[in-house]
Length: 298
Image (cartoon, rainbow, N blue to C red; front, side, top):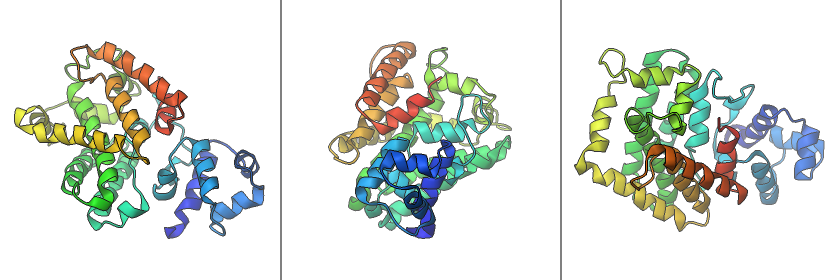
């Protein structure tokens, strides 16, 4: 594991939740010094123990192995916390990978750019130019995943990340119209805490808005952009047939309703209510993505 990423992730998660090594050891049935060895990289947990650690922190094994969770240290998410969107983005729209997928150069390059955009969000503060760069990075990744779609060894992970970024931008670009309701989940979160991303997105003037904002709105709303929507649907079917990512497919179905965007004629408020009930059902069935998101529900 490069740079002992796994050990650093375990420590970051443990400290984020305020647990001692002894407390975590009790949860995963090992001694305190074994947890210490995991964190320092002297030993690696077995597959069964990895699954226990991931379940305990309500993330996937893949996220535990391949994500950089060091940014969690010392941070707590709340709708009014500074750094709202970096926490919100990670909770709503997971960035996933696997060892096999990362072996595909085309996927890894896009995945790393995706991660860099998220890191930019964490450090942007109130710098609108930095937020614009971070958002542009998510767009580059959205279209980068389209280019990587035919990589067989990374197709499922490509589809998963594409869907997440597509739903993010779909929610952003529709909140000005269909999402003008106090019950729309994404709008409620952006409305609280004085988010700099909200400020960046809501002012569409050339001087202040992200420069690609109107261009992307036109792209997603253009009838000829059916290919983007088709890929979302195709990706969802792909994930539903995957033993590894089936739970993420269920999560994304619930999430799209929660964002007020069900494929129906219902209003966003009712779709949001349906989505919340679907998300609770997913969480009750042990879906790690749903369980994590519901911890943050306002």
